[in-house]
Image 1 (cartoon, rainbow, N blue to C red):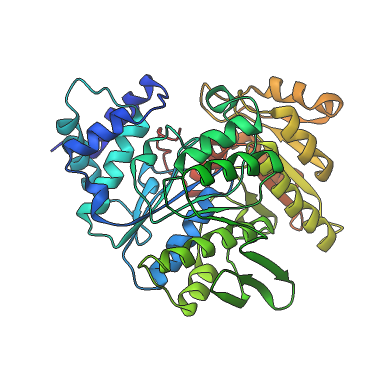
Image 2 (cartoon, helix red, strand yellow):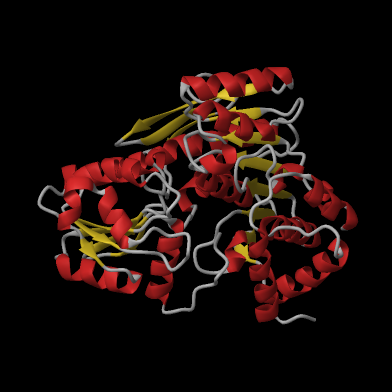
Length: 432
């Protein structure tokens, strides 16, 4: 059998094929594998931001309810195996090796799958081999032509829509909403989170065309926060009061509401859960790299926000930190990809920080520190430049007192590199 390092090297080589949107290849691959995704029900989650957190919450509640749960997400932060989990456990290395050979054999030489198509086939096959009761599947990019759209879910969700990946999905919110609405299947209920009117109109029209029952945040379901008693979820049939979520940030309440609405609809379609599983799942859910507190004194927070919409969530968290700790300074370590809206992102984050250290994730896609400084405008002259993330983290630590906060943000790839530094481990190369 192929070794694990050889398997990873093979998968890394597939990235040379780039991104290819379309379902023909993945559907052919799954057919040759015997349609493993038909052996278990799925929940399918798309959106610009928050889809990974929503998937993690749904999986945590289902696991607390006693189900054997598969979870497929992307990208990973440190270890490739983070993408494919069963009951929270990373897929074993020997299973990656075996599945790489099996999918290779099924694919042959004609199909030429991309990296994401190949790994999606691996995940769906692994879940079948593991005899999961249910799998929670996160969309990779877009939806209409994303490889994960090969599944036929019990329920779909679109957490939100904002500008991102414009070179593939379109230059307007309406165009991106159309792509994300591609996961809506005929007659399958769809949950939507906080949407602007332009996105809501597109998604509502497509749901109506496909006779997919539509459940909207603050319409058919809602969530209300109470700083003393936790938050309350009000759904179509279920309501839960005094809930707590282990993931920090007020924006996670929207994600929790979407997860609970999905689970409520899935219960009506044969996947029941209890109120106790809701409480235990949300209170224990873990999702790395999203306002993750990695160290204290000084506080070190890691968040992979990489577009202006996600920056708003980080900014709200930083503003709350300022209110609670007015004497504490905030040092931001920022690195971004070259194709992202750097000016829009920085315009939101910079007013809330005292010092800025600019760095660069070690990938050709990343913006240089000089490009980032130019994107800062007049504040660029005061930024510290540290092209290597290790040097950037060291500089931030020298700037911070024990009561200050360091926030690493701008890219999940940067967050992954910092996590690898903190763990003292070698970073897996496959993170796109």
